[in-house]
Image (tube, rainbow over all chains, first blue to last red; front, side, top):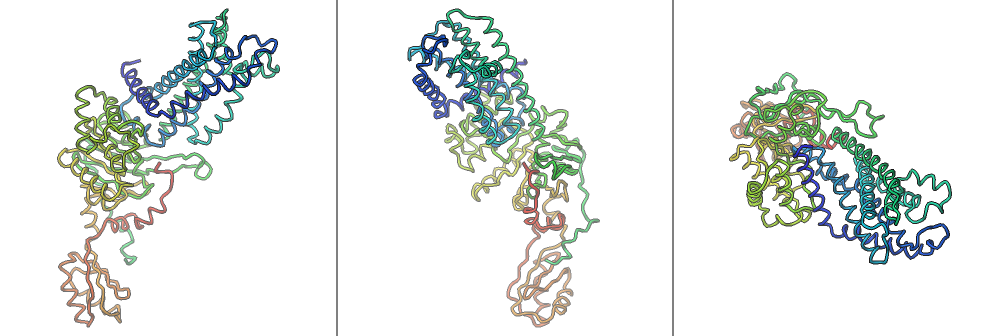
Length: 259
Length: 357
């Protein structure tokens, strides 16, 4: 990568980051929502941990990765709305008229998505810790969880951007997102151990990227980390994110042709 | 107006008169662009032809106006000349660089104020300018100084630290122009810069455009659907209709093409006989195209003001009193009517959608 791409990426990321900071309402919501989930689901499903075969001592310990991953999905799947707004407002075209490196525009999205997701994940880890959650895997386990959720965030961010550029309709993004969020979350080990799921759900969960992030994170966070599971699930995540970013680059190029 | 003046005399349409490409700041030849709008696949399998062989040439340091209704192809032309879109065929150079082969050089040489403000509403005015400058490789003190200069000049210094979403329409437009000027472009594209502005802000924008072209020697390509705007600002202009230039020249040349001023006489009483009126006025030198409708007599005259006394005398001789006389130079609306074959306002309402996105 040439230095121009790096500096352009930095400027475009900085712009998005400032926009994020300047919208305190948005910032607060991205932080409050996981708190609500953490304590709502924590209270609702507390007894789940006592089901024979569940495996975990405290439901809160179990829930923290679930909420982290669900938040990563739910906050990034709206990325396409922002892109759509930039298209409609003419901002994207304004940048395309400048000599800015084209790849920098998309890189900035990826960098921004992973940074905000990592930040959000760290906050949830801290909130869980305040609430009494234990992280037997220590720092390495938490790092794996945060990285996995960031990669997952990138996947959903890139798909959402591609969708925004492709359909150019808010309604489609809203429709698909509300349709996907809960099934994707509940067809994973976010709130319930897969061993206690009906068999067909277990099968579906195996192909669910949300579950890959959870498996990678949980495997690393347990007292006896299963690094093979971390690597294999993490590998699939990285592969899928590469595919998602590639797709968003492709749709970006077709957008440029349609201007 | 009678129907005779509406027919387009094909033989008289002036040659576009495209000068040598090397000394033109903007030079476009035979641009063709077809859009394939989504969902229009079945209704319009061939797509919407936004540009159909458009050619223009702009001399350095001048304001060139592209005038036409919505959907005529103005914005598409700007998109192609600013490297945003690629033409299906034809070629164009801007500041001496080929838009298709040397887009990066073109981008560095041009500034663009698009129809829709591209400013980031959440960022401050200053932030928008800083980012723009950085994308052109400007840094440090040099960039800060340039931005301060622009903020002061566009009277945005006090608002520089405020988020752009708090700006008024006029302020936002001034910021857009400032953004387009940060890197000191040689050619500035203004795509309908005054659409949606109140009259006061519009006048201010006109003054600014005149200043840019005059003292600073910038080449400006201005698109507009306001006849008066093109008339006031453009040294040369091209009237665009359905993706083609129908005529180009200086505003005066184009109006001169109509040969003569419009003369309107309001009679004090109804005229009994049209033939007598036509006969009487026809004897006056340089007066023609005489029509009578009720009390109104309309005619064209080479020099309207000079013809008035003779016209009054001729009407007096046949016993007709005159209540009022008006002489008007032909407007660009008349020019448009003559070359596009329909009036500007009717072209507006019938313009196809989608070509102007």
